[in-house]
Image (tube, helix red, strand yellow):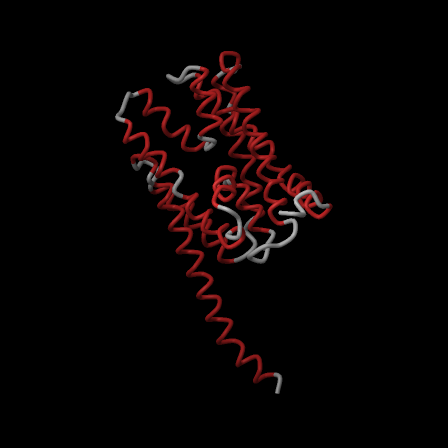
Length: 248
């Protein structure tokens, strides 16, 4: 865009950086855990570094490591990674109305840098669809902060894995750091319904193969959130005539 380096875009970019700052600790913890796990599995250091930079998806990286160790067929590895990352199809659908005007190459680049926390924080801003000054720059502020936090910690985990004890509980620290971000996103009843249903489904389907419980939890959350919105809308429509009658 012609105003790529404009004051508006610079301010929006750094606003995205500031918005992501509360999530740096959680991202760093997860990246460190993933880096350590990759190096302590069957991957060599170059392979672990390649996976970190090319895949850039912690959940699927952790999910496929036991499959590599068990020397299972490649299709099982790909299927597991696809199941874990299926939620990104939903994220992409949510971003599409905002960035449909961009070229395919730039949209693919946005897709690579997108992530759970990035999508959550971007969605909370309630941007109007279509082009808007500073919107893409805000996304890049989130994305660059996330990518740097992840890659720095992941590379540190890969290179220093032998020095990090297994009992440090970094994975738990990353999970605990993510909880406040998730709670802060529960601003409506539909969001609360989605989170509650997703949590229950994720627990009930935890032992399913190929991490299939994760996409099931995502789809269950979508259905629950949509139904909650529909019920709320119908209730509001019923209450409007009654409220209008009381004011006459």
